[in-house]
Length: 146
Image 1 (cartoon, rainbow, N blue to C red):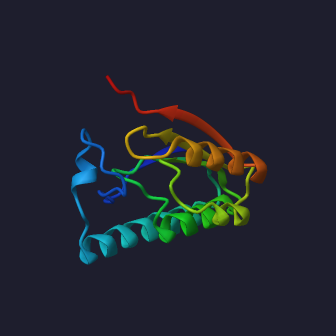
Image 2: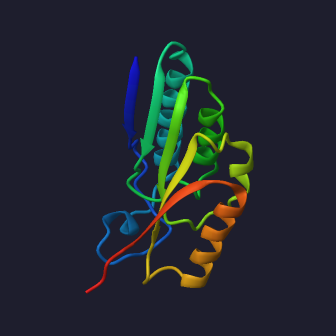
């Protein structure tokens, strides 16, 4: 079976403080982080059990996931599974990118968004260059301001 899955999970915090965004205003407790980790691990385990399927996954968390090692490790595990065709995650690109070297880059893609009130443009552009050098597919967008 071919399945395209949107994964949100319970993550609900971000390392940016955008005025318009409710996730910038929430700091998760240790219990909330544990709950998110359990949910993510349960999802990755479910994917690993789907041997006869072809799966594509889009992660659009309610916050910034890639600053969390658990999401980096999940993407490494997922992209190395034969039943996974593609894994894409939305990110502000504020994390280290070393983990992408362990992914199957033919299956990984990042949906990156520049936040002009939060990030320094030069750092974001440098991170995009690093993704390109590492052979990771990515798209670039920007938060719009009045």
